[in-house]
Length: 471
Ligand SMILES: Cc1cc2nc3c(=O)[nH]c(=O)nc-3n(C[C@H](O)[C@H](O)[C@H](O)COP(=O)(O)OP(=O)(O)OC[C@H]3O[C@@H](n4cnc5c(N)ncnc54)[C@H](O)[C@@H]3O)c2cc1C
Image (cartoon, rainbow, N blue to C red; front, side, top):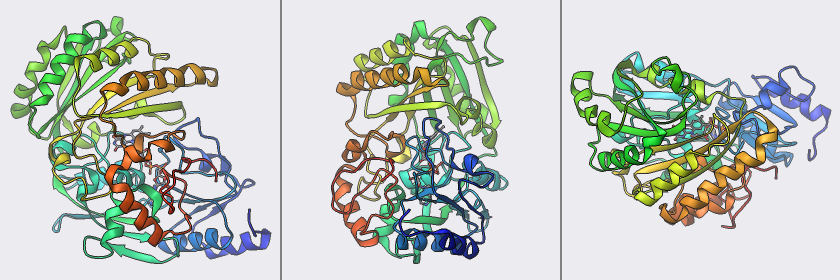
C-alpha cells in the first residue's frame, strides 16, 4: 500500500466528509461487492465520498501514496472496473443527487446517481434523458461509455444529451468542461470511459418523453425463430426513428401473460417501445404479430419509469456473469442462424442473447464528434452468460466465447466499450477505431501517469493494457 501507515489513514479519514472503510469496518464487504459476482477484489480503503471536496482529497491521496485507484459509480461494469485490489476506491454511491430545471430543460446529475434516480426526477415533468434499460445501472459508467437504451433511436445516445460536466482530474483539480470549456476533455469524456478523471456532476439536456409510453413484449417459440428473426430484421431495416424493437432469445421466465407450459422453454421475445401514445404506436407494431405463433403478448400504455424497471428482475446483482459482444451493421441469414444455433444451447436458463437496436438519431452525429465512434451500426448484440454456481464457470464462459467466435465473420468489427469483459483489453481498437489516437493525446495531457487505469485503459504511451485487473 505504498507509503501509507495507520496515521496516514487516520488523516485521510479526518479529511473526508463521507466515511472511509477498511477491511475491519462494518459494511466493507458490501461496499466492495459489484454487480458481477465473478469479481472478487479487496481494496485497502473505500472512500465513500460526500461531495467534490472528498473526491479531490481522495484523488490527491491516491496519487501521493502511489495507490492503485478505482472509481465506483453504479458498480455495474461487467469487467469489475469499479474495484481494485489493495488500493483506494472512490465510491460515489453517496452522491446520487439529481436536480431538474424544467424551464431550461437541464438536469444536474451527481456522479454516483443511478438511472432510476434520473428517471424519477425527470419524469415528474414529463422529461427524460436517453439512458439504458436496467434502472440500477450507474449514470457515470453508462454515460462515459456512450449510453444507449429505449429512447436512443428517437433522441440519440446518452452522450448526445450531455452538455457539460464537472470533473476532478489526476492533478486533483476541479474542472468544468463543455463544448467551449476544455473541449478536448469534453470530447474524450463522451465515450472514453473513466480514463480522464472522476466526474462529480453531469449536466444533461432534457427531452419531452413520457410519463406514458407504449411498450411491451410479444413472445414467439424459439422453434419458429428462423422466420421470426428474419422478418424482424427486414422490419427494422426500414423502421422509423420513433419506434424501437429489440429481440431477446432465452428460456421463458414465468411471466404472468405466458401460459405456464411455456415457462422455461426457448423463446424469441420482441420488446417494442415508442414514445407515441398507443393509438398511434400499436398499429405500427401490428405486423410483428404475423411473424409466427404468438405465445403471449403484453403491449400497451405504461409509465416510462416503470418500463425502465421492467427488466430489473432478470438483471439483479449477485449472479456470475460473462459477456461477449459484437456490433452489427446488418444481420445476414447466416448470422441469424448462428444466433439461433447458440440460443438453443444456452447452458443455464438465465443466459440470453439480445439484439439491441440502435440506429436512428444515435447515428446522426459524425464518428469523430465524440470519443464514442460507432455511428454506423444498427445492432449491439450481447451474449449474456449468466449463472449462479461457480462450478458452471467454465462451460458458461465457453458457450459465450464459442458464440462470439461463430459470429465473428458476420460482425461489424467494432464493439461497445461498456460491454467488454476483463479479458478483452486487446479489443480497444475495436472500441475506439479512428478516435483512439486522439484519446491517447488527451490522456497524455490530463493523466500522463495513468492514475485512472481501472477501465478499458487508454495508456498514455498508446500501448494496449490489461482491463480492470489489479495493476
Ligand atoms: C444489467 C446491465 C444492463 C446494462 N444495460 C445497458 C444499456 O441498456 N445501455 C448501455 O449503454 N449500457 C448498459 N450496460 C452497460 C453499462 O453501461 C456499463 O456496465 C457501465 O460501465 C455501468 O456503469 P456503472 O457506473 O454502473 O459502473 P461502475 O462499475 O461503477 O463503473 C464503470 C466504469 O466507469 C467509471 N465510472 C463510473 N462512474 C464514474 C464517474 N462518475 N466518474 C469517472 N468514472 C466513473 C468507473 O471507474 C469504471 O471504470 C448494462 C450493464 C449491466 C450490468
